[in-house]
Length: 207
Figure 1 (tube, one colour):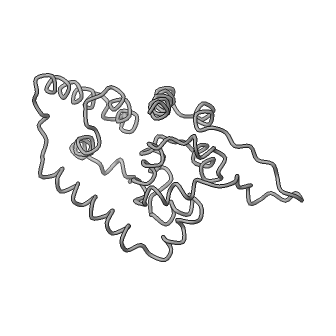
Figure 2: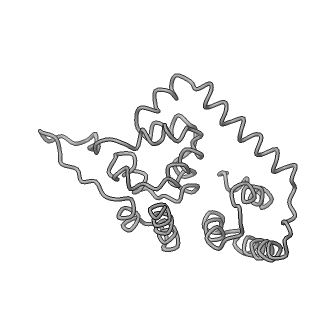
Figure 3: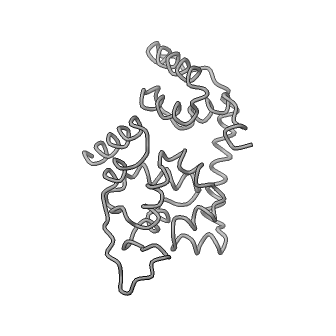
């Protein structure tokens, strides 16, 4: 049984209220992409939330459950920031795939939460994407999913391109870096998610 099989719709609503400040359409698309089996319920919830917001009301949620999750999340962050293991400290100066392994988070879970695919994850791991072009939303999302500091994630995404370990030719291979948006364009992400990343990059660049 995977993680999604264990998540109830009530759990999803709790996460939405923790992460989303407003009932925006982009947010609805993200959650429908992550939990397509609850698309109709999510659409209905966001529609109701939008109507309540217009009337100055708040959506009806279990505030105790949400508060408990916020406390739990905060304690987890404190634990990882104040008492990292030797392995975790070492991986912060190494590679993204080692950081993922040390965190206990699966690559699939990370990709689902951060709106990435296999090719993007591999390119980030091998520094094939220009660091300055990576949106802060992406870096923060990875940090949150792996429960590492944003600075640590930034550190493993920087540096010269890394060749495949199986490369046998003499001399250093010439590896080309590309921008984050170019990598998104050639990825296998869905069109709505590609458009979402374009909006995010445009928004961050304009600021």
